[in-house]
Image: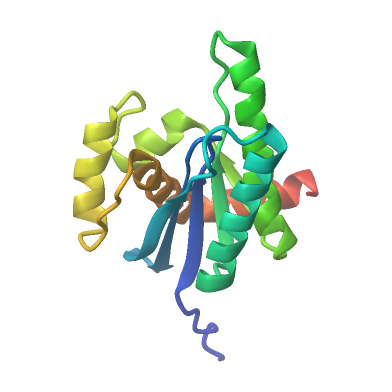
Length: 175
């Protein structure tokens, strides 16, 4: 009888895409244990043309990927709001946020905002202050400097909790 392989911690990058500020958060999960690794945000200079801002997001996330070397990544899905132009621009930032880990050979899972809130707080319509309270409990060493970095950590936590089902969905779909 052989014993199952010993798995080490899995490093996960959570990304909260945005044109002004793209939040990122890195955690490690080892079984049910979550460990804070790092967080921050990529902030392209204001007033740059859209293509330059997207390039800045890509370069910033590539630096995070190079520094922290995550094995898995997750991004928040775009919600559609009343301003179609803003939604389209956010979608472009989200595309860059998905491209950066993919260029490092990392599959990217996607989670709806309500699923992130429900996973971290227990309610799908939680507000940002409730997410921050739960982050302090789940990752006591985390001190996110922006709401975007906090959201990115929440996305990483969500992936840590749902990563097995996300991997199964990818295999079933054949992606």
